Length: 199
Image (cartoon, rainbow, N blue to C red):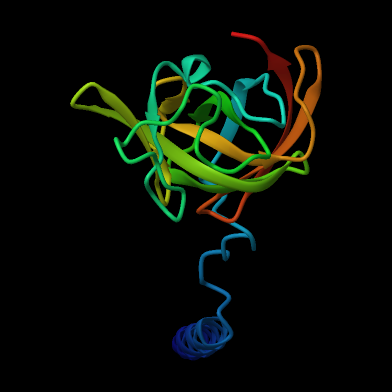
């Protein structure tokens, strides 16, 4: 009986030693590590775009009235008139005409994200903008990003954040469709097709 107990104790010690060695090997090989996030962004980010639309415009310029008033575009090489206001026939970005895309960005994930850029084949330049009112003049200015909180949403709408389509390659008439690619800070890209609307 005593011999059997000694053999049992030795067997347990050997099993414990083997288990310890295996645990060390798994740790050294990264077997116990959490899986890495997939390339191109966190799996905890789930941003979608809905109610996307683009304002109709012509390549000879879009009226400031369509954007909600007289616009000052004195940023980034786009200069306003000497009084800081744009004439009624253009938005101050050159003769190609300009438009804007609006939408709601919804983040159903557990991590915040941000809209950091966009692209389309209907305009030579695409920027993210915001609008502010100062001394009775509505000013438009580029922003680096638009935050999209975890579990929340952000609206891009006239008089606020929007995706500016500068120097259009063609007229955008009501009923047309515009393909947009939205670029997020997480690395994710969202491709949408937006209807052109006269609002």
